[in-house]
Every structure is written in structure tokens, then in C-alpha cells.
Image (cartoon, rainbow, N blue to C red; front, side):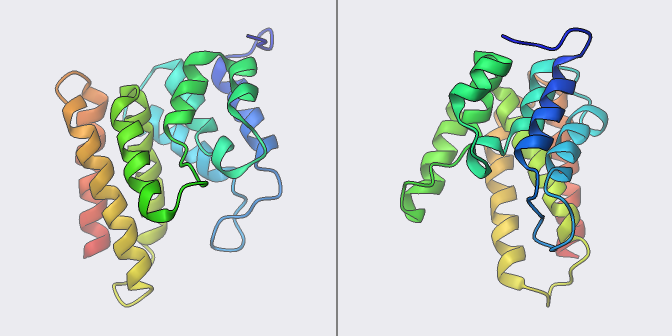
Length: 183
């Protein structure tokens, strides 16, 4: 696995993610997309308390296969199988019809590494921060759809809570954030 001398795995992942998402913008039309995976990784480390280097690297990279020209082989070559497998678990198969896409994604996430489910919680937690600025009257369908995704992520992660304190903390914090969005 090529890894820059003198740099941590997460630093290489952060740089890779920033390059891969270069030019992409968040749905607000102004924020560079690369800020999202960075916030997900920071949430994982500093809010959920996860100190696992592989998980933090995968958090930086979690949207690269789905949203950029990056593929599994690129990640495996640069970061190894473990990181690539976690990112693959977090990647929806856009070739499937939407009705099949979400159930297939949930099944893959449920069968994958617990760290993928923890990253998913950090992902929905970060996306909830965007929702907090909206009221119930603003885009109710978008907010409802996102809250449904949060519920699914929580359900998938609940079995991890007893073995992984980071997961227990993440579940609690996502539930609190959802309550704030619901008002």
C-alpha cells in the first residue's frame, strides 16, 4: 500500500478525498463538497470518540466511489483492502433501480464491518446539521426522507452498541440531533 512517508493514513485519505471531490459543491450551492467528508471524519474522531486510523481514513473517503471517478481498485491500491472494503460497504449501487438500491445497501452495510455503520452514523449526523437550519415547513419531504435514512442507520448500528462504546455514543447523539430537527 503506497503511503506517504511521515504522514498518517488519515492525512493521505484527507488529501485524496479533497482531490477527488475538487469542484463539487454541497446542496446549499456554496459549500465545497470536500468539507462534508472532512466533517464526517472529525465527527467520528472527536465527537464519537473513535480512534481507529482505518475508520478515520475510510470516513474521509466514504463518498469517493459513489460520487467521483474513484473506484474500489484505486482505494485498495492507495489505502489497502480494509479501507477499500469499508468504503465499498458505504457505497450505493447506482446501477440498481431505486426500489432495490436502498434494501441492497442496507443489507451490505449490515453484513459489513462495524466501522462502516459507525461512519454511516457520522454521515447522517453531519447531514442532520444541514437540516437543523430548516423548519418543519421547509422541504418537508427532504427532511422526512433524511430522518427515515437516520432511522435505518440507527437500526443497523444498534447491535454494535454493546461491543463498541463509540457506537453507543453515536447512536445517542444521532437520536438527540434527530429530536432537534423534529422540533
